[in-house]
Length: 140
View 1 (cartoon, rainbow, N blue to C red):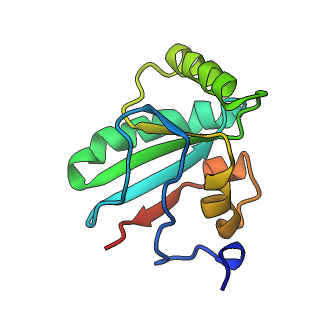
View 2: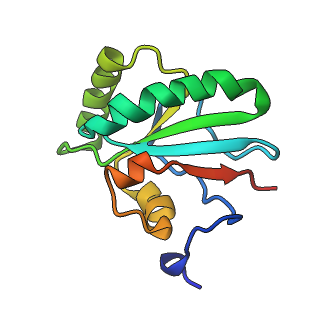
């Protein structure tokens, strides 16, 4: 099965995290065995992502951080002429709107994460992709 035909299902190994940069928290190189990762995709233009998902994910991270659960937000689909402009705009937006974020935020301008995670999960995009949180267990 080629990468373009891979489907994510229950008990599938999680695809790798391949992003251009990390905007909040330390970079994550690999999944740690024994941890559960909640990977949530969003864009700053998605109002539902910000009003419904992010506050809930902050609470979830706080409540379960000592139980091996880690939330990772992936900012994707940001609209700007260049990655640098999108990242600068997104940094300012995060600082203004989400000062209490307690989980990692990755930045994907190229769309690689959408190819690795979104397409195989058959999620149609925002808000569906952002509101259906992909849960993955670690690779061993």
